[in-house]
Length: 514
Image 1: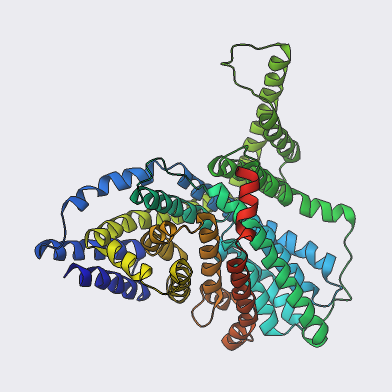
Image 2: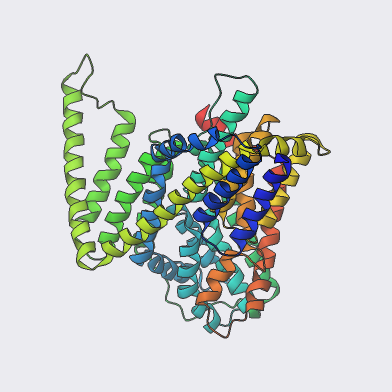
């Protein structure tokens, strides 16, 4: 009887999620209802309910998850301070005279925003509001314009630092530990969010290159659908550096500190949040922000090469001098941050950013609590054994199991958000796949790219709905769907390439972390 209850729990939960009922309450409510049903018929042990407080305490004390509000803050601040608008304008001036130059500009800006924020919905809406009217006015094919915007917006799923990768990394790490413990390995290896960031970097960049190659081919074969802009004002080198250098430095500070082993993802997210405040302050006219950003960057470099701890046995004059320099840089950065915050607050921007960040973070963490109850009940009803038996009985061994899981996630992505899939599906199938000697970093990158593909696939891709909400009436829904299909095929092809050559995801983490 428990075998039927666990499958029924999963099916009913998916149906309830598709109906639009709030995710956290759906997961917790269904888990509670089916747990009580199982308890009444003797198919569920009430002891699983007693483990819930410990699960919630583990979520609240998880240092990795602190990165979530910090990255959300980064993305929201960049969006509200109109930094994306400046980037797009300057990229248009740089590439606009080329065939398909506007589409290429959208892709590059989408990649930069993805590497700065990792928030898909905000990127698609921002790019749709800024670039779609211009592309249509300049004679671009509505389908190509819509497809370029939605595809660029979904890059936030795969290019680090992505919120998807932060959440997925935590779930994959727990699943990997569980798989090893069940195999009798009581000193299990670990996988970190930083390794997942490194693993997704090369596939993400290859995806950006593939988008640009496709856009160039379309512009060459059909020049009337992606015409060049002859009246655009050329950009000077100084203007290009002024526009591109600050976000690139922000990306280097965040990703470089993680991949260089200088900081954990949570610490790097804090650096990114501070850098975003300075960047927004400079954009809004506050003074001395560049000096503060330079001080912050120098401080990151200094701490990566010098041991600045006071509690060492031997300290010489050079050590004290470097510590004094670090203190001075901290003071300069702190004063600059305070000035930027006052400027942002005076323009009523800080309140909106903090409110949006709190709203998104609260949603993520309450879903985590609901998912904890759901997973406990699913396990108590024998769901783990059911999934293990199903995946191990599939033909093809680990390969067949991975293909089956990828197909299930792809189709679930039509109806469910990535957060729901990460917290409902991955904890169930992850330990089983990882027990089959599947590389955890490769699996995490495959899942992230799969979720990105489902985010874009008609007719239910969330990115398509985001664009539809801000697109002018002249752009039909069929145009948005038609434009997204070639980019979906590119993503599926890249997923196949990643499956054939796992080294694309595993080589860089091995070089950095091993």
